[in-house]
View (tube, one colour):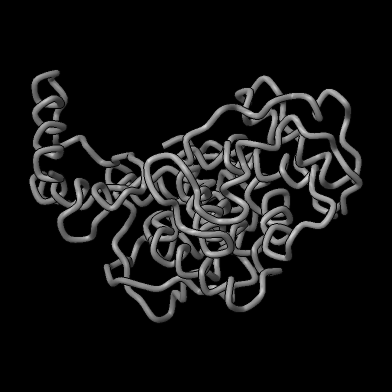
Length: 314
């Protein structure tokens, strides 16, 4: 249970000599066992240490949720521990050795990244996304087999879905949407998360998921937006404040300083219609608590970080 996990974590920290009063941040993936607002592991730990903590929830997991829910909505639910049951999913393990046909390309912006930063399946995603955007698949990619997969690995599912598309002369409309979504949203966000590893980059990555998915029709936006609203813990006010305190714009950093100094707490919703990262929270409708990671800093030290205009190491 979440309570047992929380107890085990705190017991381990105590046994290793860690001082619990110095605990300010906790990291995990986004499963509800960890992040449940009332009985999740983090909440249980907060209750025991008697203060709020900075939540650092895995963004790669968050990015996969958008693709996962879109895939399952367009294709079908999985039917067990192994197979998919929909028309696309049932063919994912059968197409990697078929010849490549003439296929429709999709114009997308592929971000640059050093290949050594990526695992083999991530490199495959990058290479096959280039093929999808160019309309031409190199011979080595045509015979290169995607990593074998359980469907729980959604990166591998994305790889196989794109490879399947290369061998379809007449893909369905549902398949076209999935194929466009991967190099348009899922893959670029994955790359930017790998490159932007700082805590303060989190809200920017979430904002990119929002922006890059706006091409979807209204019925599918409801699917994506629902996932975003339920899982964007990096858009909690205390996390977004950490991001804008290192914003490139002077006026935004100064605004963050004023908000932090006067902050109190109140829940909020994400503004899906935002045109800028800072607009994802409607600041005039809420009160806030200062980010837990800033507890040990004086107002003067926070102001110094605001004036530094760069990545702040907390």
